[in-house]
Image 1 (cartoon, rainbow, N blue to C red):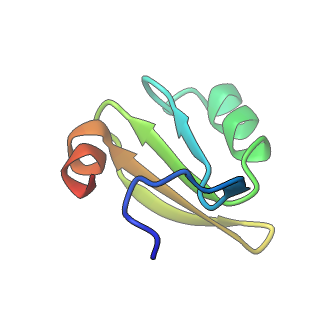
Image 2 (image 1 turned 135 degrees about the vertical axis):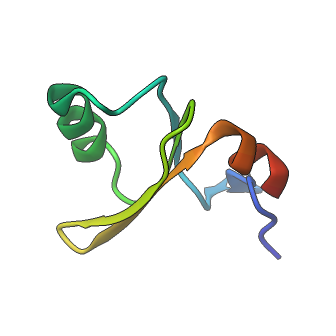
Length: 69
């Protein structure tokens, strides 16, 4: 069973999480999205759901992400 916030199970990566202050700058947003296959980006206060090249990316504020733990 995968728990919210669980990054790995044994030696297998089950979730990728990147942490950023903000994704408001276009160059930063593009760089971070390009570097993430699929997963979650935790920011100070931004929230969004997006798909990049068929990959689901969830952008969540820190407080919301911590509540899921």
